[in-house]
Image (cartoon, rainbow, N blue to C red):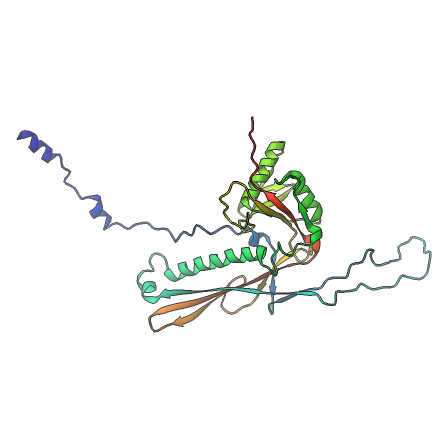
Length: 319
């Protein structure tokens, strides 16, 4: 009997965790969207704002020799060569592509559940990030203006043995040698290049740019993106796979690759993006239209090159 009384007195007579939880203020995060990426391409690429959604690239008709000029300390002739530089009669025009979505928010939810985070702003923020993800993908893969589709045949090279070697990237630099800005590659392609460098005892140098840390080759940063697909996938499950590596010169002044967007829009939220309030329906649902306008132009053939058929599945044993 005495033993039973002792066990009874050992029970903790205090407020339990479950009851206390109901009175506690739980610290919460904003919505976490695991599919979002840093989108380095749109940060490294120079952009040009358009007035009417159309960008015409006027090019000179290039011959085998430059315009004939008189250049001599002693004139061999008093006649200065004559001529003119011909322009293309039908230059290419790029029209902005629209990427849009509609976000609906119940006004009751907005009114009652917007502390500590505003429900409308969180919904719009995630939607905008999704549009920016699609923008980066379209800049690379769009059938009309995508960079991969518009690389000139003369600017396409193949890997020597499948894996991306220092020699392959050097060959790519020889195609885009006029002030190249950055390489663009899938993270697995970058890892494959690192392995090839390690095998040869020439590890790439790293640098910090725009808040990120990047590998470099010959001083040119190697920028990661999962929009340069491996066997058509962002996240391939197979150990092996084929992809491409781009080398880009960017900027209108350098006759490089230029991102395009519509400037001066009404309801402009950020570069090329408008957010319009569409009203509230009879059920109290507020609606917002998000529209992002984008495209890209290659001003000269040698502004971009691609290393094709890059194998990402080569591994080595280091003894």
